[in-house]
Structure formats: structure tokens, C-alpha cells
Image (spheres, protein in one colour):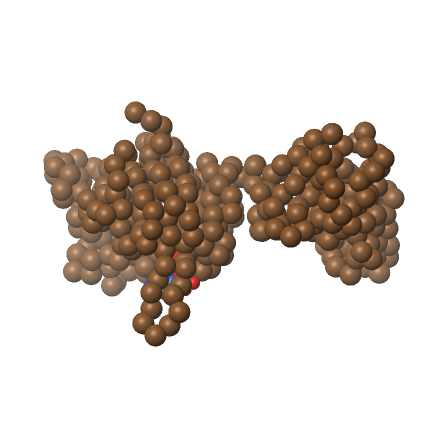
Length: 374
Ligand SMILES: Nc1ncnc2c1ncn2[C@@H]1O[C@H](COP(=O)(O)OP(=O)(O)OP(=O)(O)O)[C@@H](O)[C@H]1O
């Protein structure tokens, strides 16, 4: 048996709407999810996350491509034939049934004994803290409680795949953090292969083994949190992942005895060839222009060859966020020490070769990261 649970192969979703132009919501999506892996689909509103989830679950037809789960093609099967458990964003509990019966309903066809069903419901209800409302009807409980009931109904099942659409979107931050930890434990302990949709990076980082970043219906990168930060595949991922996001500037390149990146109206970053491995210089090649990026945490403040005016300086209790005016834009820097400088004053800074990301000026694809070529 292979270690792959789910394969999505060249999947497109095009919504045809009467009298209106079609919407190409998901484009040529390829993804392979390992058994027991926890994956986050992360992206801004309208990027195609929910369409992807609904196609896997079978609530939305695939326009092109194939989906395989546990070794069999499923894209033509009805939802009930896929062995996929899904918690919806819109909850979709059955109104005539109590919360307990809603959860039990998911177990009806599983041939579990009444005793085992009661025990499973008790466990999952404790996990999402709904023990006290098990005998209430959906219409008499809050949105957050309905969401937890819907999550419980999905988690209680034995399925090949769990699909969770914004599973904690309606919950208060404190409860959300607690449930996140418990949910992670459950998924890991039971080896439950799962994909959840979120637009919250903290949630994606806390729960997922790998994060699929989507934008405009296109999967931009599917990688660990660390890889997304250290080796973003393109400018979109670079400026979407990370808080605050990466600083990027258009630059002219001179790749001679020294490698220079000249930011129009800003600093010229000047590196000795020896500071950069040959692979990086080769990747940068004969380009005359590129977009360069540096993470806020990598801006070295207080000394260095460049100088900029401070626009703002905020101490957030454990770190300083500074905005410097560079090349008519803001260069955001984060320092773990307080920086004694006021807006309007100037500050020296340095950017090291090892911290520089280089992207193609046309396509935005990564060319090199720090001292490694992409
Ligand atoms: N039934 C539909 N008919 C037509 N267009 C649709 C339909 N469902 C979604 N879309 C469109 O497809 C695109 C992707 O939507 P989708 O809901 O998959 O994105 P999303 O990333 O999940 O967004 P959100 O976070 O807001 O739920 C959007 O442009 C949306 O308007």
C-alpha cells in the first residue's frame, strides 16, 4: 500500500452561470496528501478553497481531472460513496434532530453497538465542549455551538478523509486556541488524514503538517510552514506568508566582480562575489532586473551602509515594529530589542546577502533564496 491517501490530478472547476461569464474557480490543481497528513488550504476569500473541498467531498462536480482516495477513483461517486467526513462552514445540521442525534446519525450505517455509539458521542462532545447541549435542537443553540456540533459530527465518523471548512471560524479566540490543540491531538493520535480550509495563518501553522497556498484558483505552493517562509516559490507566497510580510523592491542588477542590486530611488546593495555561492550567481545569471525581498526580521537595525527616515516605531511588548522610508515605499523591520529612535529621525541599517530573496521581475517566480538558489 502506498503512503498517499488522496491524489488530485489536473482538477479544474468552472462554474457556468446562465447569462453571465463562467467562473474558473480552480485551475489545473495537482496535489497528493499522505496518509495521516494534516493539510491546510490557505488563501484569501474567493481563491477556490471551498470549491476544492466540495469537489473532494462530492458536493460539486469536477469540470476536468481526477480525484483518487484510498486507491480508488472517486470523482464520479456520490458523496455518500466516498467515505469522506465533512464539517461545513454553514453547519448543515438536521433541524428536526437534537445535537446528539445529529452526531449519532453519522454513525448509523457504521454497525456500531449502541454502547459504542454513546461512548463515541461522549468523547467527541467533550472534545469540542458541547456535552451540555447534546439534547438541544440546532435552532436553539448559538452559531458557535452549531459549528462545534457540525465538527463533532464529522470527527466521530471513521472515514478515509476529513474535510473541515473553516472549522473554528465562529469561535472566540480563547476557545479556538484550546480546541485547536485538542483537534490536533485527535487527528495525530488517530492518524486521521485531513484537509481544512482557513484564511488564518496562525491556525494553518498550528494545525497543519503542510500548507497549500491558493490564489486566483491556482495552487501557488504546497509545503511546510518553514519552507513557505524560507523558500517561497513566488512573490505571492512571499508577501502573503509571514507577519509582517516580506518587503519587496524592484531592483536593477549588475552581476560582475561584485553583485549589486540597485533599488530605484533607494539603496544599492553591494555584495562581494565571495558572499554568494556560485549557484546563486548562476541563478541570477544575466538578468538586468529582478524583485528583491527581505523579511522584516532580517533587516539589521542600528548600523550598516544604508540610512533611512523612520516613519513609525512601535513597541509591541516583546518586539519593535519599525517602518522606514525606502525608495518611496515602506521597509518594515522587526527587532526583538526596543529601538530608541523617533519618527522623523534617521536610522542606519544593513541587509545581508544571506537574507536576500530574488524573484523574476516578469513572472514573480523565485530565483534564489538567501545563499541558496531556488
Ligand atoms: N456556485 C457557484 N456559482 C458561481 N460561482 C461560484 C460558485 N461558488 C463559488 N463561486 C466563485 O468561485 C470562486 C471561488 O470560490 P470559493 O468559495 O471556492 O473560494 P474560497 O476561497 O473558499 O472563498 P471564501 O473564503 O470566501 O469561502 C469565487 O469567485 C466565487 O465567487
